Image (cartoon, rainbow over all chains, first blue to last red; front, top):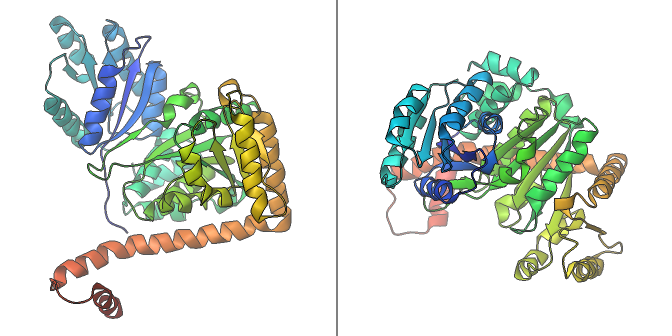
Amino acid sequence: MTEKTKKHRVLVGKPGLDGHDRGAKFIAHALRDAGFEVVYTGIRRSPDEIAAAAIQEDVDAIGLSSLSGAHMRLFPAVVEALDKAGAPEIPVLGGGVIPDEDIVALKAAGIAEIFTPGTPVDKIISAFQDACEKKPAG
Amino acid sequence: MKTSRLLEGLKARDPRAIGRAISLVENGDESAEAILSALDENFVSEAVIIGITGPPGAGKSTLTNSIISELRQSGKRIGIIAIDPSSPISGGAILGDRIRMMQHATDHDVVMRSMATRGRLGGLCATAGAAVRIMASSGCSFIIIETVGVGQSEMDIIRLADITLLVLAPGLGDDIQAMKAGLLEVADILVVNKADCKGADILAMDLEAVTRKGSSTPTQVSMTVATESKGIAELLDRIDKLDSEHRDTGERKTRRRAAHEQEVLDWCLEMLRPKLQAEITKRELPLLGDPRLKAKKILEEQ
């Protein structure tokens, strides 16, 4: 019909009550500069809100940020909310102050990638690219 | 998702199907055609389409949010298309209009979609128009298109609307000067948001004066404080009245026809662009000679 204009669409948001959004905003900007369309949902979102927004926006991947220590509860809750809403194939990536021992558990709970402070931004961008390209059509 | 399943999903108001259908159109996917041609035209013709435009920071998203809250009280199903610019350098975009509307995120009867301009010259109008149709046929009776009112493509999008609101706020000075040239003329209703802030009355008076010049009936200014939902019910009353007026006088039909023509033209250009691009590349045109003549020749030979 017309020229294919597929772009990677991702959602960046912060679940829970943590208001430290510098990291999330930094990643959102980095992704924009790498050519992504970033739906930014801001701070203090419930997992259900994030899942609902991701579905309406038909994003290819979700990036979550948490600096409050509640990641073990909140990141898997977003995966569950997506599952409940019928969109289990949308990959979820997470970042924040996350101890090494939690990373294994989070990955087991369905989080595709976890980034800790000091991760080079290129690595994060290419992880998002992989996640977007791997996502099966729902 | 298969086209037939998508269409069923649209009828069943499944948010996944709505989101996916809009993506297919946005990405120029082949299957979009089958979806768009199967939509329920009756719903589309009955829906009220509102355009909300204004400079950055005037409170468009916040105003949209309080309009949603007000309309949801009467049980209306609402669609929102929020358009933000794509970066001309990277092609990426930050779509942040949702931040102000997250309170409605889990409400199934508030269908929201953020859209990036993707640097399309006019194609955005075609895509936004398609999104309006998809939302309408999934039962949205009130659809809001929100966009920053700068640039030609945004002006074209606003033409999709039955009624256009121009939202301004005190303290934005220079932006308003810039808006005076174009948007004041296309706006049906002027809204001074942040009406509790200093300078709101003066801005409203200014606007009344400016709009009085050209026509015998000055555009009335609505005052709102979107963060406190003040003036929203009155604003919706005005929209409602104007909409019935437009329905009675045939203005609504006239606008719909103009919008429709604009959309068709947009699709034509969208379909032509890649073909022409390929043709131009293929010809390996010499650097010398008049580009206009070359264009004419290419078109004549199509």
